[in-house]
Amino acid sequence: MPWKESTAMSSRLEFVRLASVPGANIQALSRGFGISRKTAYKWLDRYEREGESGLLEQSRRPHNSPSLASPSVEKRVLALHEADPYWGGRKLRALLLEEQASAPHHSTIDAILRRHGRQVEGAASKEPVAPGRFEHSAPNLLWQMDFKGHFGLTDKSAGRCHPLTILDDYSRFNICLAACADEKRTTVQAAMTTAFEHFGLPERITADNGPPWGMHGHKALTSLEVWLIRLGIKVSHSRPYHPQTQGKDERFHRTLKLELISRRGFNTLLGCQRAFDEWRDRYNQVRPHEALGQRPPATRYRSSGRLFPATLPPVEYPLEDKVVKVRLNGQLYFEKNDIFVGEGLKGELVAIRPTLTDGVFKVYFCDVEVREINLGAQG
Image (cartoon, rainbow, N blue to C red; front, side):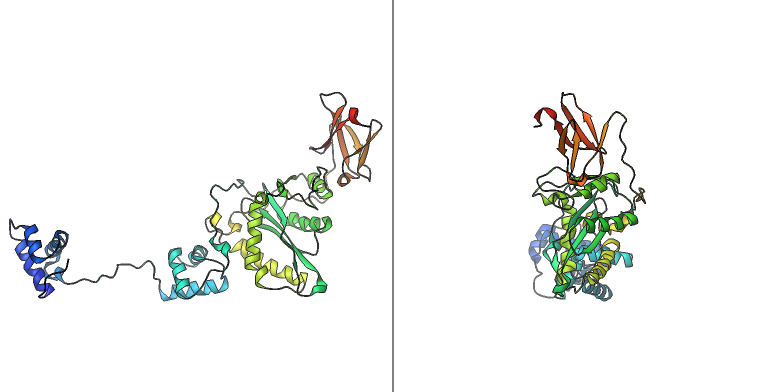
């Protein structure tokens, strides 16, 4: 409550002198001066600690202003946002901490951007991180691979760009970002060879069910899968119509589109690849990643110790296996029967092993089961 009219200073001084008398009734004095007991004790405490100067009116301004930053910090925040207008307060704060010992809270940085009419571009910047998201425990245990939706070049005669992406599951490090002219097996294999030469071999690669790494509706191996299996790489496929299986790579695609593809055009595949390479370096080395504690992917990634071989290792099987060569039409000949095992295996050696059921055999390529043969069902 306010003090009664007169001068605030004289009223406070009169009050504290009366209230300081031994046995004074503080409650009655508070009513007489029109103030609350809380205010009464506040002024008594100040008078005891500071004397009459403690009764002077004090500034109501807070001791610190979390929503304010120094002009130099504001200037740097705006400069960082100018370079990366799709990064919000959390990412910009991580960049500031790379440059200096302390930085404002991310909400303060967001307030700076709003105050200067800046908006964080793209709804993806506001997406929450999924709780409990699974990730592997080390680099190169799993790579996710897919094509980002293709797009046209500004020179129509140059065709379209099909971005091929490979992402390490643990670190979110982008292994490959290739501007491809098509989605053929030879194109993908060439890009993967370059990635293997640079980073070594992963333990497993997952991809969708479409060509060139899978065959919709068929369990037969593709030639690309056969090549990977011979390299000792396990191959798995996402569930049909469940892109979340490739969730980290799908998220990478949205970031790529937001920060690069939707922001500019490309006249040639070569020009597109140059832009990809420049953006990829910044993504891996600089861009803070929320799931990594606002650290860039390069801080968690290291190359594989499994080197890419100069030649494919030979396919070998135990002596007790019956080993046959798959013909060019994808069939093998066994017990007077032509058995189709897939065109991806043409020219490869496969093993035929009996099961516990009479007349039933299983066909293996390396350690992968290809199909089952039931001689009783053969026509």
